[in-house]
Length: 187
Image (cartoon, rainbow, N blue to C red; front, side, top):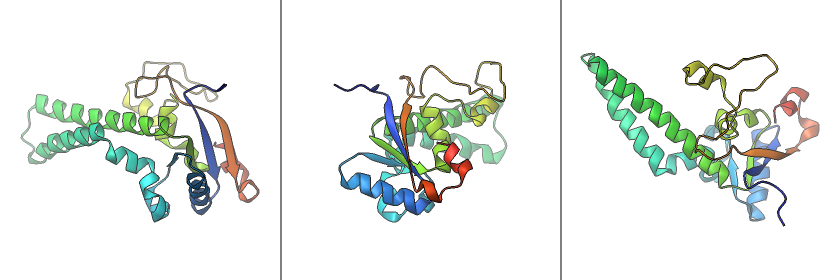
């Protein structure tokens, strides 16, 4: 019997990108479904198809929303748009951002292990999938006013895909002896 939540995932981190890549490759070799979080330029080419960005870029809903936002914002260049057209462009961009968050949450929900560097564990897409409100989301003003303190984390009841947030009850830190302490505190 499985004793963890269906929303639970394992977070596996290494201090360096090379270490995270080796960890991801090893996990893939044993048959686990891995999503590698990090800038694609920092990830070995062998893992590009396993990156979170690749999953989001392959999502048809995210692609449609991005195309709609591109078309809507292309019209802004001539400076002759009315207020309603500017609002439509803003709405299209917001819809595209949400579609990308939903796509990244789906990709993370669909994997066994999330692999990143220790610092990369604080990626905004991972935090959002876990229901944690990122500073960018606070700045957007879409968050209801909540009391903030320096020690509290703002959370939502659902992830961007409308399901319960992911949890990361198991964190593995590879290369821990090579890591600096502050980086080990992020995951």
